[in-house]
Length: 234
Image (cartoon, rainbow, N blue to C red; front, side, top):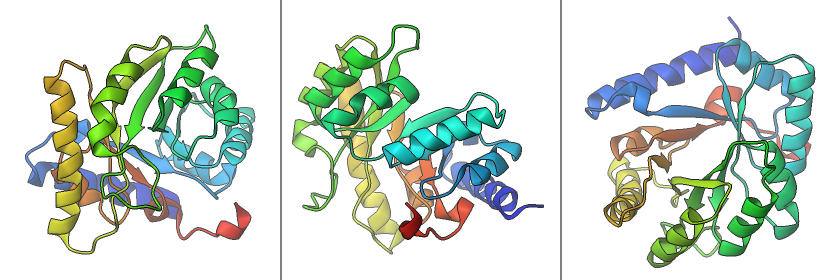
């Protein structure tokens, strides 16, 4: 059995056991395989193991990989853009990805809306929230989320699905849960405000279990699937 297949099986087992421990249905938690810095051959190996949703942080690398995987005859995959978005990069994102997790400005959302091709389904959107208030992190401040959410939800060619966050790293399980709980509370406030949301994109290799306990519906896992990254290749 290939290492990637083994890793996917182990992570799937962790998702199932953690969801059960948290009193949730395992099917409510989707695994997003973060394939940044890994080549199309790693994606194809994961596809052979049954994985269908992949996340990319770097636009050109992602576009090259999408094309290479398609040319290799892979089945239809769900590609999620999970990196920072520059205004001049919105068109290829709108044209090639099914999901965008990192919207933090109305201008970016408007451009994605305008540039989404008519023949494609609406682009699925999460707002990135700087839930820990880190100066180095992308994302909108928690107190500004509601206003942006209502504006994005009103745009054509987009479907606002929910919120995404990358909290400040924490070792303690309780600290990890506390950060994710803040995002969940924001999400619940938006639901109470009438927005039809269903997605909390939170949790990575090191804090996935805490995120599932706090209601994650998408966990973004890279190194635990593909191995240690070599950023010099990116």
